[in-house]
Image 1 (cartoon, rainbow over the protein chains, first blue to last red):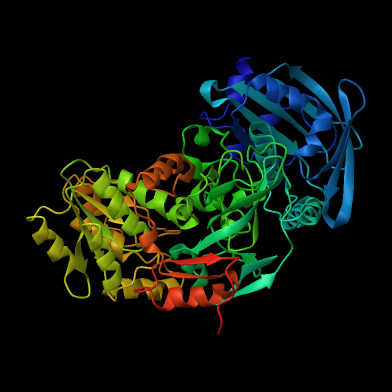
Image 2 (spheres, chains in turn orange, blue; image 1 turned 90 degrees about the vertical axis):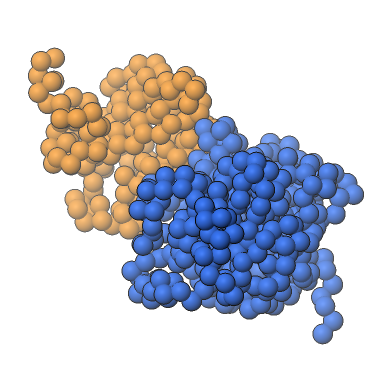
Length: 200
Length: 396
């Protein structure tokens, strides 16, 4: 553990807020496994406070088939076995990307960590931390490392289509919060048809 | 259905649009019986509010009959309800503290990005008030989809007329919260800038909270008369110098509490205001702010500043020095409507607050564009336009 102290940043801020270029490296040393192939170049971190018991939030999330209900870009997550799941995710231009993810570490009501397996279209890894927050409910923190498709241009295109992971992670967590706190996901749509179009 | 839609600066029309449908379990559909044009709708009409899209349905002061409910709504078909203009979930941390306009979940997730960037954290949703506040269709329509209908709308007892309770949707709670934010103590002298609906309700509220004197400031003679009716003393800033008048009327002390109920569209051809106009049109500044400056300048040392007025962006020449040196306290915010509705409904039923005095014009929904123009062009006489979808179209 002596080494860990050396790689710690100079303050208590999460690595995702770091201004240092080697934040990704720091993350892979201390926090998250590297994606199975290629080098992760981007880190996303988001925390959200949800006014529900931590156990309820963990249980909903750990049932990976649920994730598509609030992750707008996720077409489906299909469990393969207890640790592995198959992900189909929307990509710019009406395409989809796919990968298998394997849970590398889990602690009930605390942590779920994963990496994508070899052959992933978008290599990624990350962890979701769950922490009790007393009267405020629980804090859920998502930290994701990924290698955006086709480098910078791919990321730019993704951003234009608002499929950029940093934006998406923030929005997905808000939807998770809405679903857990209110039992529904807020929409300004007017008709069922309009709602379907927005989800497409 | 028919609905009043926005198409650009000074261009609103009544269009035929799709009927709203129940989309979420807690939704209800309301058939609108009365809906008002708000002073803040004029900010949209004048094109001051960004993120408006052509075809957006306006209106955030409305009431009506419940015609359809989702499985988790607690309302029943046939009930008459007034709907708060703030869309709040009732389940998040902020709603738990009755800070409904700070609700975490009122806005669709995607719309929260703008508020996050502009203000640091996104606020609640609002009906009919741009995509910054969610892009929700508003109440100047025959029907409205009301999210979180189990916690928002308040049920109105039978036999109580629409016009008595309609203003529970926004301006009455807003005027009340303005007075509450002024932290009025018995014996206080309170000055209110702006005798629009919010200012006039703030005048009534301030007296109910124990103010000894209320001084109302405006330049529309008819609006000042209304303030006088409720016992306020008046300053017409076109006739008298406001700061000098306030200082003399308070024996050289200044008002104990000041309320800025003017906000974004401060009239008055003062040098700094004209400068703001120029800056606004050249993107150097966004909000025109004479009234809040004057209020801070006049407020007594150690006094309280309440700002119900709507500001959206950045200001410059904010008198931070006077604010700090005099040790003032500022309270502000969008109204936590849901928090105030029950008590204010009681106050109306008990005759403690007069609401109907405000209504100067009634017309059908089809005449709404005319109503906007009248309200915009003649704020002296047009104090409140109430639209009624069932109202027969006026014979020409």
